[in-house]
Amino acid sequence: MTTVLVLNGPNLGRLGRRQPEIYGTTTYAELAEQCVAWGAELGLEVEVRQTNWEGAMVDWLNAAADEGIPVVLNAAAWTHYSYAVYDACAQLTAPLVEVHLSDPSARPEEWRHASVVSPHARAVVAGEGVLGYRRALGVIASSLA
Image 1 (cartoon, rainbow, N blue to C red):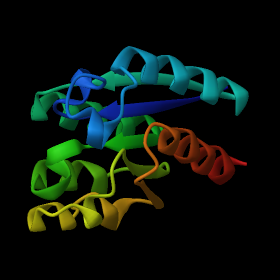
Image 2: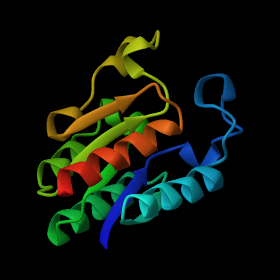
Image 3: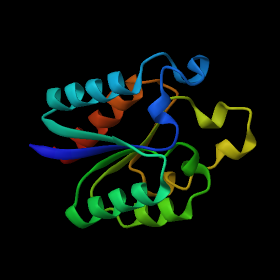
Image 4: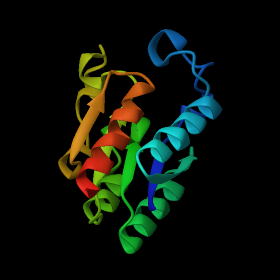
């Protein structure tokens, strides 16, 4: 069974409590459980992680690059400005799918419209809430078939 990392950036550990009108009411624990279940349906072993520390995210991406592990990435705010995340994503050889609960391009803050992850992503799934993670895992599974 192929291992896939689902990596989540800052503040996503507060899902269900943080701005539910934007990010929904599903908690982070519920999202993690759903990702594992959806992955199993697709024949994937999913490991879900969240960090508020940019260096931890970069370390995880570098390890995925070293081991050829596919990644579903919601880099959250780092999506828009972290060149460290950009450089780490550039090293990935296995598929990378960028995912966002909301649609950053439709948000009023202009700075949310740019992504340093997208240039390295096989696909971008945005604005589908937690179901976007299911679709992102489907893209990974299809690319491995």
